[in-house]
Image (cartoon, rainbow, N blue to C red):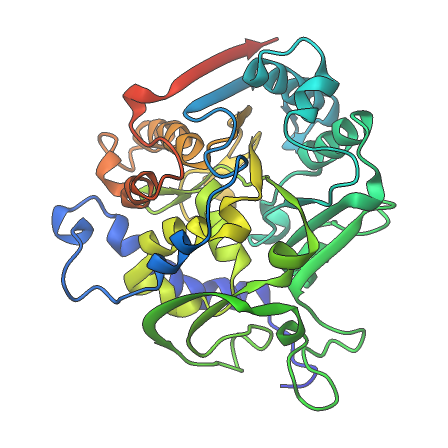
Length: 388
């Protein structure tokens, strides 16, 4: 295992044949696939409610409110434009908060001295990742609002994927770049004793337990902390940051969506491969119900400048498109529900399905039952703004 690297194409081939394909199965829209049965594995979701909610708990300051800003100039020659993204984010923040001053809008969510974690998504590699146009706009507006760069952490599950997609100190001077799982300068995922570096970065005091056995696969996932029935939270969310700004990409997962909830849940715990087959919906909802996420995620900024409508959560060039949109909400459930409609509309236009299948959003219904947000579209306060 020492020094072993994993070819990205091989990784997604394996994921597509196993984890990702299994993730899509319960989201096909068929009633038989979506119903919860007595054979569904047990989890420790009851432990989540043992920690009292706070004033910052999901769904945050504006439950059920989602702002969608569209700008046809957001992407030029397949490249997101930072100046346009900045204006879209500014408009979104002011509309969401009903403030006239941008600094006051941001200060409703974060304060100087707090450690702010920006949860990005680089999993599909250079083809499709949370764009620098959006992330740099977030960083700029945070610093303009009084947040010191030293208190900003850009993070995800795998540090090597962050580096591959340009999330480096060179591109983000003064900002910490952190991943739970990582390699050393020799390309090894383990120390001299054969222990995974990622093992240092998981917090065994916080975990999502599910009655599904995982098995460590050193050939295909040499860097992944997995095996057994426990998925431990990363120390990044339990110990290192005070607030989380979630910055996912507008992507599909079969006929459903992988956006705010998925980006948080599967990016924050270890040993996730075992969860795709039988507990995809449960994991997306239930992991977010635990305090390290529930009480720290204050804002969700969906990068919909470019996204995909098929083949997600990986990336296939033929399915990448310019949505030219940004979605902002404190409510991760509501933002996923609105994001789903955008993806469904594109899939219908491309002939991939005939009509929306909201029944495929089981995880959002579950999240609502857990008090994490609003999944009923009728109850969502949607503001759509067209910029020129």
